[in-house]
Length: 167
Length: 379
Image (cartoon, helix red, strand yellow):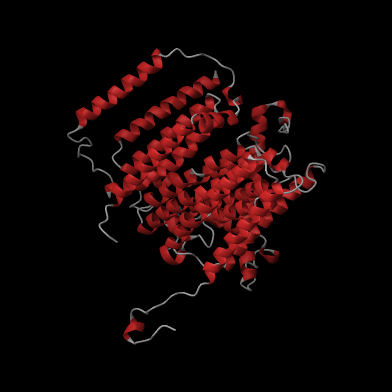
């Protein structure tokens, strides 16, 4: 009962801070709202008793949001944000709406169409060693490919962000 | 692996038990932080052949309490250029992660707030979050020095987190568990610092950097950027940053003593009763803190480029090499003595490399400015 009430409070908080990410006028505020939303998702994992995923969420996104703030500072050069009265949306907004609602439709459709196996007992009792075995032994090659793609994307982002001719 | 029971809940009620344990840990933490500020001033003073605080009480032992009272009643100022909410929430965002880490630290057998099977992972997942608070303080203050301090802190902490985590992973590989109590219990015969000295050296260096202690106190360098990210804070908000800094020093020292020095379990911790275990934790963490202060009193501050080069070109490579060597040894079940030998060689090589680089003479080909105009040549 009390868990359910807490669950709804956290869900409302996540939605509110996600709206804050979209509607706030400063990049810095957006990033801070983003970390509140992501931490809320981490708390959701705690409610679902998957501590491992909750910790992964905190570890990855804590660092990721910091990097995001730094990149925002490097790329936009205006930490102060858009002044009031200036529209936040650019001319591309119909396309953004299309992509956003399309993605939401796909996710909601997938979530409702899947038949979930139901209550499988306490997931927190999953042996972490087994997860590691699956990830690094059974899917080792896929894992390495994904890390390589991420690394290339990171290096590319940094090169675009630096935009220096020569030192 | 040994099954560990983390004590029965007090009074048999889990939530009351949790609240009571948290209250005890917070009380001890506040007291420790007040006395760490006093202790640091005293220790550094002795290193510099001064007396340190002497006026408040015998040998100045009430100095910490006097400081705390002064900070609490000081006016809390918010600059007009500051970004209001970011500025006001930054101290909390810095402090809360440090406080959360205290939950899993085992002070004695069966004595911590909670024991998690993923304790080690929890510690470094949560510790990464206080960068956000520091960055918020830097960005929200509306001050160029604070911004510089915050961005420096972010760059430094993100970089040094990698060798820190990898060196801890190396130990976790040898221990075969992420449970802090089980790690301590595994060291009942010999602490892991003997088995993994290279990991210890990397951990200690990265820890100094994560804590912004000298010689890595670049984000809070008074002589360069006035005071870093908390330059605009005063009164109780400033004291929250101070509290977070000393509390994380304390948390790191207990964490390091559990992972590397055997925590409450070495020597004889499992056979003798809890006062001995508490005493072991106390002595080991105190030793850790003293070495941190000793380093602060001895070493000059690095430059930011030296700091980044040292992390990305030395520490990360060495820590990954350590991880690979550990993996090979453990996979093929080669003897632990050989692993320890290789590790010792690595640790001595790393320290020797640092020493050799530090002892190099500065290469000055030509002076600049006034010296050049006056025609002074380099020696």
